[in-house]
Structures are given as structure tokens and as C-alpha cells.
Length: 74
Image 1 (cartoon, rainbow, N blue to C red):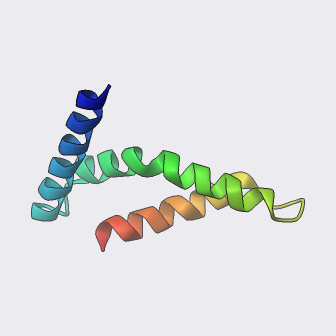
Image 2 (cartoon, rainbow, N blue to C red; image 1 turned 90 degrees about the horizontal axis):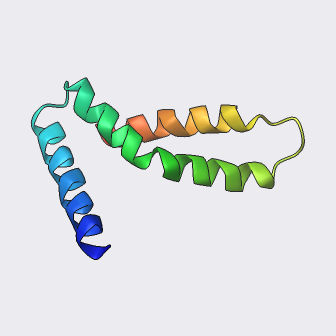
């Protein structure tokens, strides 16, 4: 429902704020990665569908997670 979506958005916003105060906090970084992992997977699957056979989906997802980690740290 709308309230739970709004509450989730507020919660993740607070995680961002807390992470910005303490970027060495791996637990907060991991929560952000977990939050946005479905987006990484979705986009990796979209790209993978257009690539030739032999390209491994898991390799794309791994690259996406590294990109996500870079984005979070930036």
C-alpha cells in the first residue's frame, strides 16, 4: 500500500543520510546494495537479451554490482 511504500522510501533515504555521515559503515553500504540490486539485475537481463550467445548473465550482474558500489561511494 501507499503508506508502506512511503515508509520504505523514507527508510532508504535515512540509510543514505547515515551512510554519507559514515561511508566506512559496511552494513549501511550493504543495505544500499541490497535495495538497488533488483534494478541491477533487471538492467543486466535487458542488456543480456540483446547480446550474442555465450555472454554470461552472471558476469553482467557482477559488473553491474561493481558499478552500483562505485555509484554508492560517489
